[in-house]
Length: 224
Image (tube, rainbow, N blue to C red):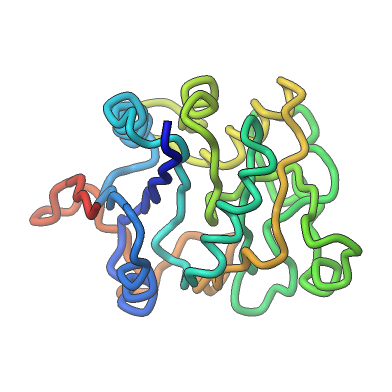
């Protein structure tokens, strides 16, 4: 089967600087517009099942500025770990000099908090002796798995319908429990996270999440 990769974009917001970088990626992609994390459980599973022509699927959030080189570095690294997980990474926020890659596994906890993560700093990433960094967290900043892996480890959230959160933590915890760790992160797969403070929900009007907002329906938009 010919190898084909699909980029799945989580798109609950309208952030022009981020959307422009994603629109400029000349690759097969699908925009998942204005869904909650919980709603995406069914949507992403349906996309994987209905697209046997794709062999790999990568997830990116719409609050990141992404380069083609970062995305391609994830795909190129995944070739060497086809039955595993490869992820890009980003800064936690504007002012925090750590990135969303962790040095150690989580404690066995269902609910993440700030103490759950043993983050790398950006300097530690730059100075890491290999071009590929092991991590115990896949943060959906260009997180890639093969089709069979997405079936075995589907998108799932913490919480209960219609709420849902921390799908990245949930996936990472399941991978850890199944001895599927570490995840591999190429140094070249850095994307810029535009969030002002990673610990709190955005309150700036231009950054508002539009799911559940009248006049902004959910939508799957294919760009192949």
